[in-house]
Image 1 (tube, rainbow over the protein chains, first blue to last red):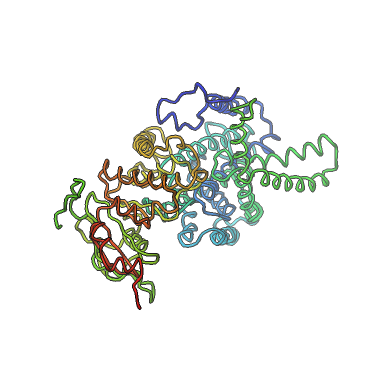
Image 2: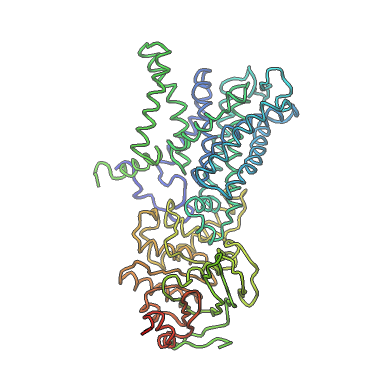
Amino acid sequence: MLYREAGDYKKSYAEDSQTFPLKLDRWAYYALLAVAFLVVPFVINDYWASAVLIPFLIWSIASLGLNILTGYCGQVSLGTGGFMAVGAYASYKLMTSFPDLNIMIIVLLSGAITAAVGVVFGLPSLRIKGFYLAVATLAAQFFLVWLFNKVEWFYNYSASGQISSPTRSMFGFEVTGPTASASAKYLFCLVLVVGLAWVARNLTRGRIGRSWMAIRDMDIAAEIIGVNPLKTKLTAFAVSSFFVGVAGALMFAVYLGAVDVGDTFGIQKSFLVLFMIIIGGLGSILGSFIGAAFLVVMPVLLKNVMVGMLGWPSDMSSYLELVIIGFLIMLTLILEPHGVAQLWRVTKQKLRLWPFPH
Amino acid sequence: MSDGYVTPDGRTIGGKVLEMQNITLRFGGVVAIKDISFDIREGEIRAIIGPNGAGKSSMLNVINGFYHPQEGQILFHGEVRKPMKPYQIAKQGIARTFQNIALFKGMSTLDNIMTGRFNHMKTNIISQMIWQGPAAREEAENREIVEKVIDFLEIQAIRKTPVGALPYGLQKRVELGRALAAQPKLLLLDEPMAGMNVEEKEDMSRFILDVNDEFGTTIALIEHDMGVVMDISDRVVVMDYGKKIGDGTPDEVRNNQAVIDAYLGVDHG
């Protein structure tokens, strides 16, 4: 009875297709934004920023990107780690080649470069589908990591083979580098997350999003409607890789500061992002965030509970953490194969009628 | 009949929309369509009938651009059509439905029909990203047309239902809606009444006649139910083993000896 649409009349088609059709949802969303922008930056500390919030924000961008490709357009990709590496190395090369360039522009340019690389590796999708495409994108993953290890130009011939991020500022605040403050890094990532989520939502609600979903659900029918499969799939690869590239650039420049490509952007990261969108919900913007939260925040939470509250030894808790997370993943998928976002949808449906069952 | 004709119920049929000239389609050694010519005229309901495996669906696939015939040519609005991809042909104004429903299962009824508007929506990816302004305006304009289609097909109640959850008859109707939303010059229907009960067939027949009547849409359909075909179509092409064995009004076809032989069998005794 608390949560319902009665009395919330829609008077135009634009209102009918709002992102948050219910007033309650809209207020909750605005409140969340207000807290994220106006409260969190003043209370954030280094631990919260580096253990929870910044990784959550960055992985959210990556899973939004993969969700566009896999969830909306139906093209399975295991190249996410490799594309994140492209974003990271692109931002490194841009930062060191153009020291005066604004960091925001560098991050967005890195996304654009990754988009171009993504389109090239998306070309096989015109011929192959499903598992076979996944294997083809695996080639991108291994090739790109190998490339960044092998070609010294990418890491500016440094002896360690690593890249490390120089200090860059925005509006006088240091955003990257060792001395950047937690709140500056957090705000920088937050702005990009909110902007990109908005773009993702807009793209998926309109003509282009429907053509992606049409290709995903029934490619032959999509084609007789006038959807060009080549253009549509490559657009999805480009947009998806842009997101993933931005995530990679942030991961390197803002979050880690120094990166060894094999460790940071290996195949396990491709799987991590894939798990995020499967758990969160394929074809759902909210699901991308839920999935990222699940796999980033849950381990930290478990560790705090086991080590901090229960006082268990940390080595035991780190093993138990893996067991518990594995169990939770299975539980989620058995209870709701369409992801947590679907669970949320069902809950909302029930809440509309609460306290009556029907 | 070079400049059209008037049907018994008084509708005026115009010039040739589509003309198939000596089409032959082979798959390796198998000849699916053999030297077939016929035309489809503006405003008419044209049926293609024939026993199973006669090559009817292959014919639609040729019109659609899924198959490219080895011989013959296709004239669309009097001009020879170059070999094209299906999506290019869709842009010329040919829409279709499938024998086995080919809806977008993960999308709502509304989104499915909105997808039918794809060719009429032009805003670029940048405006789509920003949404506010041109993209939102275009969306609302096209939504208005889609809502007319929804009203027409009487599916208002299932507007926001995912199509996978709908019963078969309604799915067929949504698929027709998706094709109608494209406002095609030529609408191809591949067995629109397959697997339906009598009431559903009556509804579908009424929608087909209404589409033709209200929007003047030219329709070509494949159907197995002879009663329906003879009732609603203006002219009928009969195919058997890839060849054309009859062409004319329902009455002419009904009395054609070759057609009777193909359907009832020939006494070889």
